Amino acid sequence: MTAIRLLLVDDDPLVRAGLSFMLGGADDIEIVGEASDGSEVEALLDRTRPDVVLMDIRMPSVDGLTATERLRGRKDAPQVVLLTTFHADDQVLRALRAGAAGFVLKDTPPAEIVAAVRRVAAGDPVLSPTVTRQLMDHAAGSAADTRRTRARARLTVLNDREREVAVAVGRGLSNADIATELFMSVATVKTHVSRVLAKLDLNNRVQIALLAYDAGLSEEMEDNGH
Image 1 (spheres, rainbow, N blue to C red):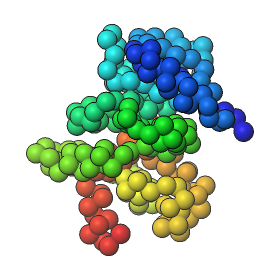
Image 2 (cartoon, rainbow, N blue to C red):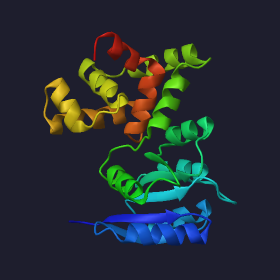
Image 3 (cartoon, helix red, strand yellow):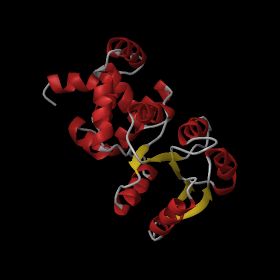
Image 4 (tube, one colour):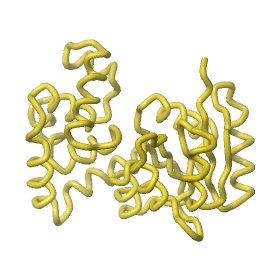
């Protein structure tokens, strides 16, 4: 089994040491580099070729949000999981729009952080219940009508099947769950997800979910009994 190549980014050396000890103990994770600021990440990417970057949000020079935006603009962009000590709506939404695949609190149990790295490496987003609630609140906010109109206009490029898959992704279903619900193979689901990402010019499933929330698609599914 090929190990997940992981890059750690945090300005606190004690936090980095703790993460390195915790994650380095997993047989399927290899820590290929460490950085103390977001400004160092792009240069490290070229040398270490990580699959996943686990990165603090708050850093003195270039913060994790800015670094994520820069990374996700690269053709060879790794998945990014952001670490924080607290949830803030604006940070969560900016992180997800920037293309982060996960958002983990620093006091998350070690086993769950390891699981988060594995999940994003496999292509699945990591959204805690708190983040999911924030997405729902965001969709119901004061500017919801404008966001809904714009989001639905973007989704017109999808065919009916791709739209169904996008809605299912927005509900947080795995590829296997989507395959069961929509009566298709997992391979076909993956193909549809790839097409949705390409047509909408998105980086990952989290951004599909956010767009689905903006468009109100999750509400449609609930109204239809799903």
